[in-house]
Length: 328
Figure 1 (cartoon, one colour):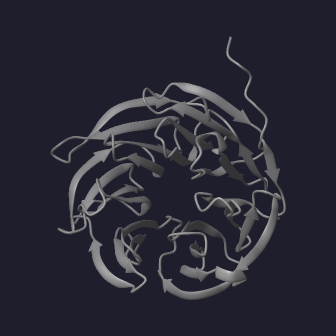
Figure 2 (cartoon, rainbow, N blue to C red):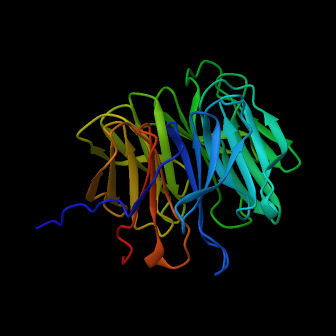
């Protein structure tokens, strides 16, 4: 007999707006307070203290336009945020500061989250949807130097990039980019060559989210339809459909594979969070708490597996925090 799904371990309230993005910072020193960053529709980024379950700081840098991406850059004192004001902001949060130190004007009107990859100490690559509709631009940070612009072939009709994932096989190996597009395609790009290595039609609808496991060379994507698509990358860097999984209800806003690659979570338009085993995509749990679309899911980076958390942010203004499958 399957166990009934648990209740959230706790719920964070107080954003006063739909929550569009979440990012944990829990992997620091023993004495460091575990933090969760959330970005909401009213333009605020909230810094949640996971010991007190309260907001330590509210950051206002996007002109009250929706914040849909938040990432840390090598610790919780350096933050990157992206908003519907077409700006990506870099923040200095050390010693209680809440200042924007630099920003990038994307000139992109979509809501494609940028992707970050650390390539050296103090150096990152950032991929973002560019001003021209089908293009992706890659910059180096903090210098903001342009690395490349990834342009589809003439007449490809991919539509806008919807989701991006920079990755590399090992630290120091060639960085690659996976991009999901409006036409349902996923493309693997080489940054060094500036060209597409492989293209796969994974969905009939726009790819809303994707995640990738570089160790298993296997990824997963979701769209506005009732299908999760699992695809793999062979030795020749070709993308191939591995399998598909049919869902009960349409619409996946976000997908996250847990850092230990054991389970994954999906954020559903049907208000539910679904948990799957990553190895065989076995459905493990349906977490039914929210009363509106779940926009984002994120796993914590705790060093101790028993402390691992899952967070979900919803249109209902709430963030649910779950402790599940921590023993595996």
